[in-house]
Length: 156
Image (cartoon, rainbow, N blue to C red; front, side, top):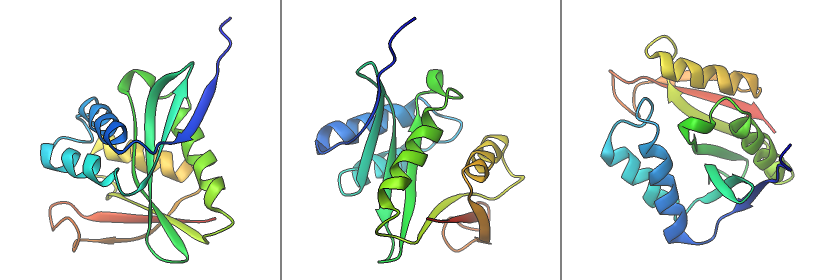
């Protein structure tokens, strides 16, 4: 049996994290369809804390954290290569990274497409519910009438 060495690191190389975020998002077209959105996430990885999860020195996914106030953070973007989904990497990186922020922040939020509109985003909602997030509200002011934004929150 392989000796699995899973690591989570805060990436500081802006070029690497931007390129890596884009590469992962390109591998997830059911969630990240639009080039402009993928480019925006990749560019924002340069300014937000971006954590990379790896196993045996192979990078498998990332989690971006954005500070939204002195009391709250947001999971701005999360992605794991398609071939490595459903193996616990997303759960591990979310749980471990949120633990790092517990001492400094009270809440975490995540934004996603509202329930019942897309089977892939319904999976995303289920993932966050399993991590203890709850629906706060749905608003149309962020992404428009055709893409209602569900805001989910969790106490840290």
